[in-house]
Image 1 (tube, helix red, strand yellow):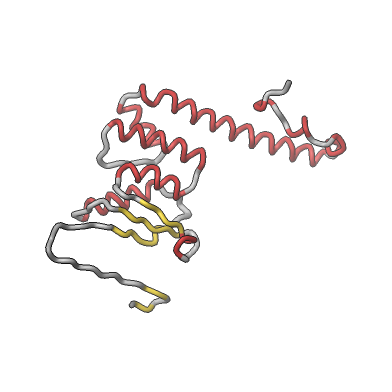
Image 2 (cartoon, rainbow, N blue to C red):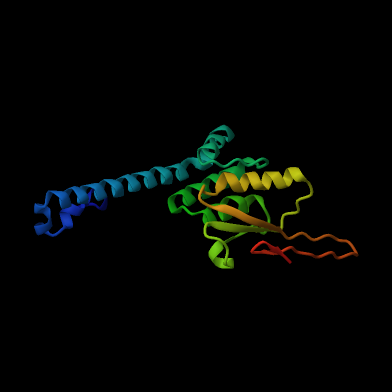
Length: 182
């Protein structure tokens, strides 16, 4: 019996294809990539087993490893961020990473990719209910987004859904289409 970790394409390939040295090298290259990816996933999954036993310094090192830079988070929130980062690393994708990591920090956090709003390829929008009262909090939000998105993705805009217990209601928007402001 062959275990899945030991399985190679050359074990299951048609015998007639193994006579060609180029094809055999291609199979071996694919095997190497698949084994490396499996090995990396296993390393990440082993980290999950010990996260709850780690102290804050160890968790901070893992946050740094995954390029997560929360400004204000307690140890339990940091552990949750690391756990989600591990799953996100295995699954990869800007939307997933941002929803998982920033969703812990910001109430009502949502991400829409460009395909969902007919935007430019590679862009995304952020929506959140978190009340942001000053420029430092806004800057922190931008830093957390930039630290957790991939380099190919670009933030299109952020919509802050904030409510105030005032007797006055102010609403407005600005839409730019092809250089024309409405």
